[in-house]
Amino acid sequence: MGQGKSQFTEDELQDYQDLTYFTKKEVLYAHQKFKSLAPEKVGHNKNAKLPMSKLLQFPELSVNPFGERICKVFSSSQDGDCTFEDFLDMMSVFCENAPKPVKAEHAFRIFGEHQKLLTSSFTRDHQKIIQGAQ
Image (cartoon, rainbow, N blue to C red):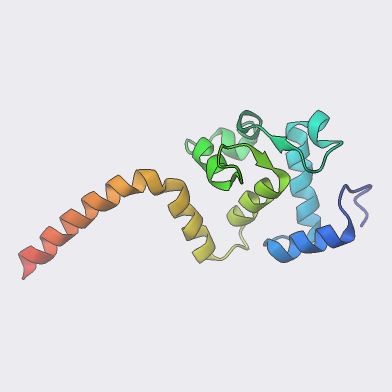
């Protein structure tokens, strides 16, 4: 593919392309980003799982106040530690090609705990306004 030696077979790349909103080239780029977080661990093991502390070094997560929550939502073990597939899923949902309903579903999962309080308060206020208008 012109990308040099890949840790993935052509079939694996095709599966990733089919299951995400990425092209094969973008999947390989995401893997480079994942690998850069822990080259000693990922370089020899495409199934490596990185601890959340490593993932939070990724620039897009390091500046996000919800970085830990994002990692936990996309972690298949729900502890924030992620495999490449978890990471790819996360990157895919945040890419511009992901449909808005997919982004919205994950936003509710990420902000869910914080939103419960806001939503219940909003619902109460909204009901008062509706009742007052009747």
